[in-house]
Length: 127
Image (cartoon, rainbow, N blue to C red; front, side, top):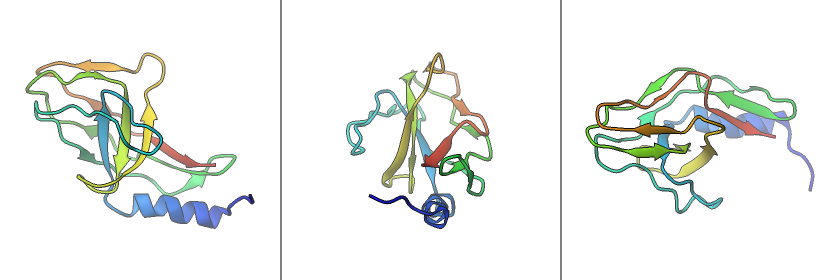
């Protein structure tokens, strides 16, 4: 199988970036086909809009990087231990990308706490 050009990579990344992407949080990660992931339910949890900058070099490939901090609602009930995040094409749309948090980034969200994804922390790469 051949490689793809940067023009193709940029077109795919811009499809995400220029749409209306939303970020959600996972208690358990989905399978590669996008099924099986578990998000918090209740407690004021809802996916949030996310913005990405223009495609850039990822050596190899191309990437887009989250361009603004995303603050989730304050939890009105315990959400549990967050282990990863995902990007959807709409608030109730299709899962496009997901990432397991690395190292000690997992976070338990209890009543009265907020989850936050700092600017630059979510990167989507097409190698």
